[in-house]
Image (tube, rainbow, N blue to C red):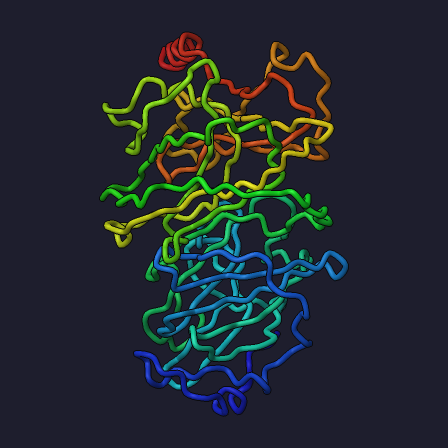
Length: 418
């Protein structure tokens, strides 16, 4: 990928936006190697308003990720990239911008002050740029690793995607500072497992468990609880797959969803639909703790979404043909308590969760690499403290968390303050 020459930029077609002189990059002139034939199986909205939508696929043979970025409302440009901690400073970026006359596209990076610089090694390769009915579509690719010290190494685990929207033209790339932009981040797993999906059973059926047309309250974070019952006489089945159902238009609103099984010792449960911390919540809701399905996107809620109705949920695929093993979901992480708070003014601080030997009498097969749990709180603007691990065969261990003992913490502070 190279920054296009003036002759190429000036040959581009006009894009009808608020910035009338913004030019869309000419597709034929800027086309690199042919775009991938396979579709883009993974897709997420980057921003809460849904202006930016990212799709991608992964080639493990070529060790390359193909990105397709849809910009629904193009103003003066957009930047997209990755960083270690989800900040726009010290980020690996690709930038589309205009100086008021011509359009530019290039591989860039930001320093610790948020200043943008053109990368000497251009590793993002633009394959296609075109207008569609939905907006401007940019297709580009990037190797997993580039041996460029300014570039982010794409590897297994969570990747912090960052973005910025340029509201006005800039005379040069170096004139852009991320502190003046509308910015945000999204957390995803870019490198999805390249595994074959087994055929689903012929007697498979589906069940949808959805929120009942909930009016989203006007607050930053809402946990909504809804109780529903299975049909009478529902026999034992195996869930073989599940997937999210997100109300159209609310893709950037729903942060995560979980389906819990309630304790079998109760013959019935009262109907309830309301905030999970409501004083009207029935006591028996506390006995619905066994996780059947859990899904998270990681999108952030902003005030613009208040007042929307939502009927999102989870679709379960199940079969009466039982398999050899029961599967389970194990909850790992840190207990939500104030003592898990990160001290102020720390540039880096590690909190570690432990699954003690009291919980691990049976064999545990170790993962190929250490998994870090990033703690936070209940609010969606903080990182969550939980990992859900799917495994088989089923054991009685459903939850394994740890927390700092308050007594030892008080002794520690007493020694520090002496």
